[in-house]
Image (cartoon, rainbow, N blue to C red; front, side):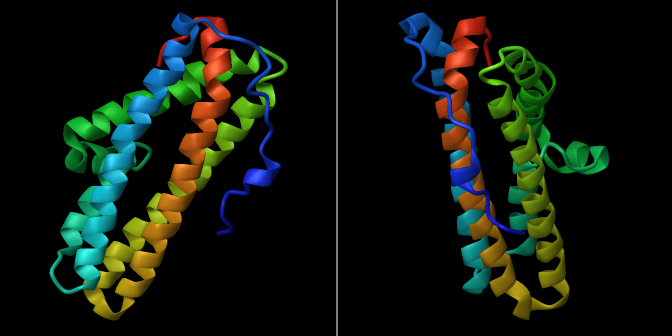
Length: 179
């Protein structure tokens, strides 16, 4: 799958001056993403450890599932625990409440649409990483593919986070929405 193309993203940020209180929702969003960034680092270490012969495929899959609230209900219930419940809540708020609310503001509607589309790209990455983690169990020579897939996931997810933090702060603040 091609990486998320930053050059095609709609840009609106910087069009209004927010009060410190209005900037609060954007800061909260960044803190949530920082939690995800920590999970990505953990997942990366698990995959690299597997590649180097000191890791375990189950640790890799557990890391993937901790990042993936949109997997099947059975997988989420069985593997994600508290972290997945938090991530599920976060994605539900964005996809079902924040993005539609932001889309009511004409200037920000293209940003909300793009962010929702990027969630689908991230989900495809997560599925690929999970599939490869299973494949490595049967064929350990595929661990290089897994390392590459995790790197691609991390690259796109980090890019998504930065874009979302930059572009969503204003509409969240203007609408008085929390994350």
